[in-house]
Length: 268
Figure 1 (cartoon, one colour):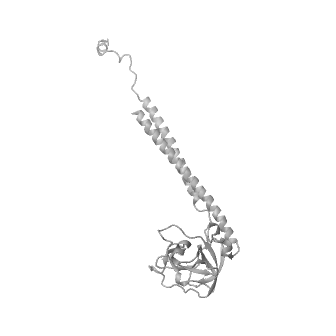
Figure 2 (tube, one colour):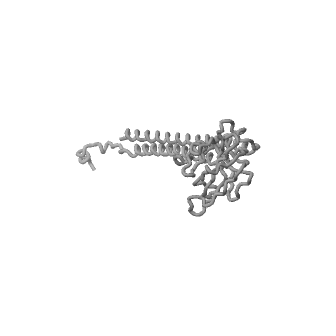
Figure 3 (cartoon, helix red, strand yellow):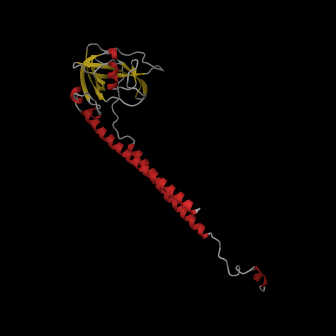
């Protein structure tokens, strides 16, 4: 029985050590995420401070808006293609649900960029915006912030279906719209002619360290808690074994070791 208990204790101790190791690795992972976020924040700050520039000067000939370009101010001039406008569903700005209206802007070089013209708050339980501001005709000049194509979420969320989509993705939109699109999109800061006042503006980026440091502390605390529990219960088991040995049968005296007949015949 004692041997079985020892095997069980060793197995439990190994399980606790593995658990503590996993917690430490999760804490380190959160610290790595913190480092990545700080590096991304540095890029965002630099891009916000950079002067406006033509889009090709920023992203190059490949037309790919990457993380290194996020929130950079780009300048484009072209004509909106209102026939290929897309309504973005299930959007949220400042905790308000609503829609965003994305319209391709065709440039003079034949390429097109997706322009997020603005946010329309949802009215009641409507499934589509009741009114979409008209697309400006003629040549339009836009100064806005570059954003990389959105990925993830629901299946085919970036592929327009019946004029709607959930994610703004340049490559997925290009397949449906038949345009040579930049892989990314632009949000409007300034537009000439002016953007419709019905559109709501977009907030800027969140530049902070996030919760990663505190999450790391929590995982490290869980690791210490597991190791502390192992030490505590180990000491309890040791004390229990000592108590069991002290409570063993008392030694037999010489008088008690005599036969019963001899004890009975002994003089009073």
